[in-house]
Length: 77
Image (cartoon, rainbow, N blue to C red; front, side, top):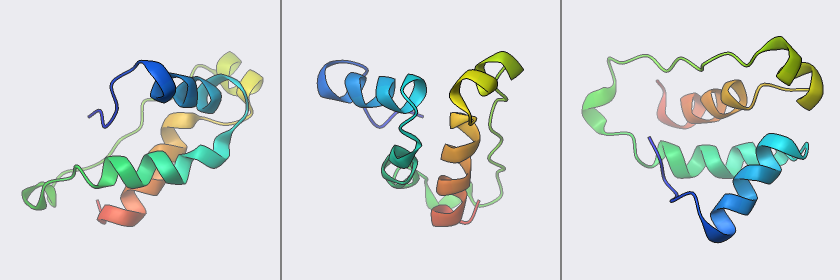
């Protein structure tokens, strides 16, 4: 699922979120992505892809898990 095209300002925001410890962008991205959830997806599960331990150690968080948590809370998946 992609709300943004990976270029321009969106690309810079995504890079900030992933690589520059700006985990505060998770609610913003989660809200945008949750808006794409179709009503007939209610029987589906949202599963984040785990980050490699070295990436998690560097970043201090798993961005996929943060996004999944935000999307889940907004969409009830």
